[in-house]
Amino acid sequence: MTRLAGSPETARGRRGVALASWLFGCLLMAFAVTLDAAPYSGAKPAAQRAMPLVVPDPGNAPPGANLPFYEARKGDLTIYVLGTLHVGKPDDYPFRKVVVDALRVSRTVAFELSPDDLTMSQDDVQKYGMCSRACLPRMIPAPLWQKLHQRLKGNPAMLSEIRHMRPWLAALLVETLDSMSAELQTEYGTENQLENIYRGRIVGLESLAEQMDAFTGLSAAQQNELLAQELAQTPARSTSQLRELHRLWRAGDADMIYDFSQSKAEQVRQRPALADAIDERIVYARNRRFMARMLFLADPGKPVFVAIGALHLGGPRGVLQLLREHGFSVAQR
Image (tube, rainbow, N blue to C red; front, side):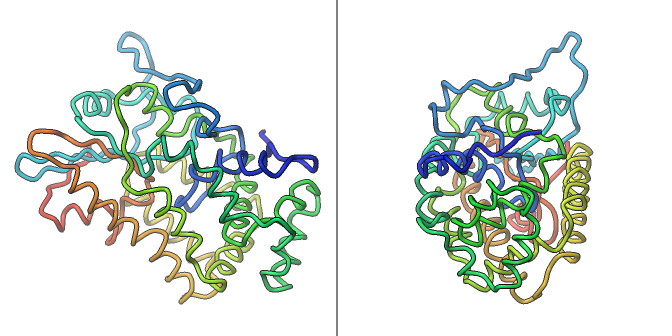
């Protein structure tokens, strides 16, 4: 079990760093990450970070999880796509040989955000997600605040923290708190483990400003809907669903993950029109941006390895379908 680094005596600058350590690991995952001090805390450059190392051992290492991994080809263009989960467990690794081989032959590796952007994220969390005063009770409807207060009444330190958050950030924090008992850790997130075995340059498919804007650009009503969705189920139910997501991710089928996410969304959405607008902004618009950047990176004879959240892959508007619509043949590996 982990706990938030912030506490009643935490300075505001420290609070921003703590939030940044997990925020960009969970953006656009419909489920949460833990609040452990993540390798993406900004404390050290990517090359100096210390994290649990799980590397392939051809001799006697047991196989890790299957993980959703796809190869897209169009003529001389090759794009490998790995669906990631930003939290995990040690036995999710090592990566399968086919993943490691693809990583080794790829000239470019791309995450949603580059590690360099992630190390600078705390200032943006502070600027766009936090208030100097207790703003949240005044920004959301009174019944929603009462529901949130009831959820956190047993955690006064966290209740004090969340008062200073804008609704979109409060929503991410609620799902994080609900998932802590799932025993998933940020250091075993896929991107962190990929960095253990890839020492080259990693680029981002979007800028920090673009990813932040997906949330900060939500209207007040949309932010309220996002928070209401996170409060629609009990913590136990949310934790159970996170465990199921982790199980499906280990099974390695992007379409099964998509179907599960759609079923979960139907259970929690409060106002369908607002929920659809949120999905368009923070999922589907970004899928299209990822696709455009992937095509920009692709060169004949120079494979590209892309690692993005597994919930971006499947479904009729997912990245795999977008690849097919651009003439790629897509095969699961």
